[in-house]
Image 1 (cartoon, rainbow, N blue to C red):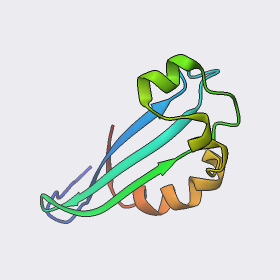
Image 2 (cartoon, rainbow, N blue to C red):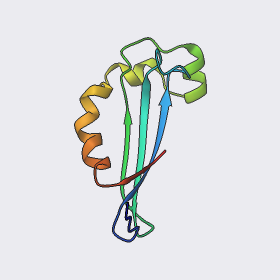
Image 3 (cartoon, one colour):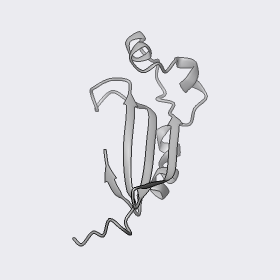
Length: 93
């Protein structure tokens, strides 16, 4: 694979979740920074509705409250936006 970092955007992704178990825990926040030629060209940040009740531990660890996620979009609803941001980029997490 030929990769030219001068013309390929790099995206750094940070996720907050309800826990450490991918089979039962859900994403509650997505943060993305997109860089081209070492300059930030796009920032993206969304709270995500996990469609479940947050534990006290999750709230204390992340600072994200149930009221923050209750009216947020679900992850599946955000997929088209995420595809648009990530599709042409080198993805780093």
